[in-house]
Structures are given as structure tokens and as C-alpha cells.
Image 1: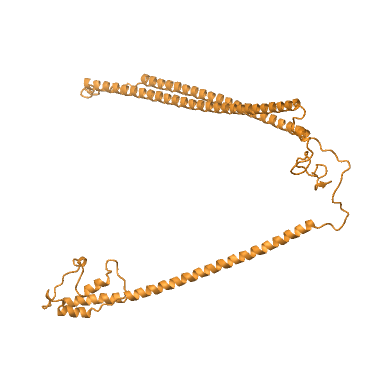
Image 2: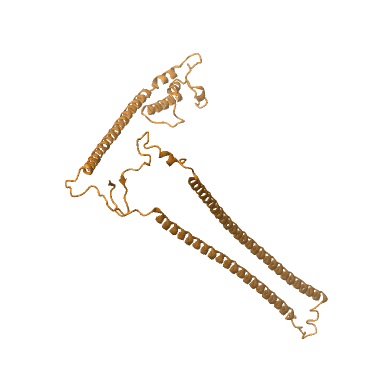
Length: 396
């Protein structure tokens, strides 16, 4: 019976799904579709895909829900649903995964805390060691010597005077002037060498161009002479053709040369001469074009070199003008400063008695705020090191 066969196939598919076999994306159906297929009730989208089978059930009617055969088929097709088991298994797997991730996080956290604790202990030990070293160094510096043989201060009865500062400034000024002169001489020599090299390069370039021009003209004249000689030789040694053949018999060679053949041979000779003339003219035109192209290329190269030389010259002049302007500006600034110093000195000399600040300060003996002498300019009673006796500061 065909309906029974289809029921067996469907039950086989259901048993395969119950055993956990997977299907492709096109064969995967939901639980509602399984129930519908078991009851012969399909959704609208599956009506066109399911073949309409003929049943031999005589009791099948539209008014009856299921016939006997369909009812038996439905009873034999017992559906097996694995959704609950699948959901439970997925929940268990997710729980196990969460526990594993939590354990990994705890292990990582413990490792970080242990590393942080070890680093903190190392820093504490290092800080304690540094503190001990600093305290020991400070105590060693502050402790007094056990013996009294070494004096803690030295008093000079006849101290050598410190030389004035203008001597050192004079030496430095002489050294600076010598350096400036040497630098200027080097720049001048470099400039002269560069100009000489540029002029020499220009002369060599002009000589090479003239030599190339002479060689080109010489080769041109030589080729013209060779072509002229070759053409004259061809004209002078023009073949006269085959010698006239005398017939041995009166019936042989009588009509070899007819007027038509002579005319044809003459036309051929004229065509050969014309072709040779065209070839010579074509070669002359090619040589003329090549010469014109060479001249244009040479003019272009010369123009480029001229522009480069002009640009270098403009850049050198601009740099020299800039340097000169900077020097003039510095000189003007120095002149203004010197003039101001001279004016201040003249005003100081021409000032009346009691108008200067230090003369006004002579009226007062001590400062109101710090109660120090008015001549105090922030100096202390320590002597600084000298170039004669280096060492610690000396206290009077």
C-alpha cells in the first residue's frame, strides 16, 4: 500500500532525527512541521513541495478529520522531541564554561597579586637599602675628625691678587678675531676655487661642443664627397648591356630588338635613374632633419645650463646680500648701545652733587627692613675658590 510505505519512510527519518543525526539547512524543519507532517497537515509554504499521493482509503472524506488508515499511520509515527534535552545539555555546557572561565580569571588575578606583592617587597628592600646608605653617608659627612692635626680653615697673610678680567677678555677677543679671519680666508679661498672650477667647466664644455660641431661638419662633408664620387663612378661606369650577337644563320637573331623593346628598355633606365634620384633626395632630407634635431637638442641643453648658472648666481648674490644686511643690523645695534653707554657716562659725570642713587643712600646707615649695611649687595663672608689654591671655600 503506497501510504503505508510513505509512513515507514517518515518514521525512519524521525528515528534518524531521534538518534541525533544532523540535516542540512534545506532539510531542517521545526517541531510544528514534524507534527504537521505526521498528521498530513502542512503549512502553506510546503504545499507545493510535498507530492500529492493517492490513497486507497475509501473512508477519507472532507467532513472527517482522519480516516482509519491515516489514523493508524499517525499512531505508528510516534514523534520524538529532543529540544528539552538539547536545551539542558547546552545549559550544562554553558555552566561548565563559565566555571572554567571564572577559575582562569581567579588564577590570573592571584598571579598578578603575587607579582605585585613581590615587586612591592623588592621596592621596600631597595628603599631601605638606599635609606641606610644615605644615612650612613650623611653621618660620615657630619662626624668630626678624631685628630686635630688637620686644620679646618686656612688664613692667608699675603694672598696673591686675582688678575683683572679685562686681560682674559682681551685674550678671548684676540682668539675670536683670529678665528673670524681664518674663517673669512677659508670662505674666500673656497669661493675663488668654486668660481675657477665653474669657469673651467664652461670652457671645457664650449671646447667639447665646438669639437663635436667640427667633427659633425667634417663627417658630413666626407659623406657628401663619398656619395658624389659613388654617383660619378656609377654614371661613368654605366654598363652598356650585352654585346650584339651576330647570327650564324640568316634565320637566327634577325628580330631580337624591335622598336617596342628599345622603348621599354629606355623607360626602365629612366625609372631607375628617377628612383636613384629620389633615394638621394630622401637621404639628404633625413640628414637635414637629423642636423636640425641635434641643433635643437644642443640649444635646449645650453639654455638649461644657462638657467642653472643664473639661478646659482642669484642664490649666491641673495645670500651675500642677506649676510651683509645682518652684519649692518648688528653693527647699528652695537653703535646704538655704545652711544647710549657714552651718554649715560656723560650724564653721570655731569650730574650735580647728591643726585645719584649711591650718594642719596650715603645719608642712611642701615636698611630699614633687613638692618644691613647699605653697601651690601648680597655678598657673604666666604671666599670663593681661586685658580691658585683650588679646594673648599675658606671662611675668615
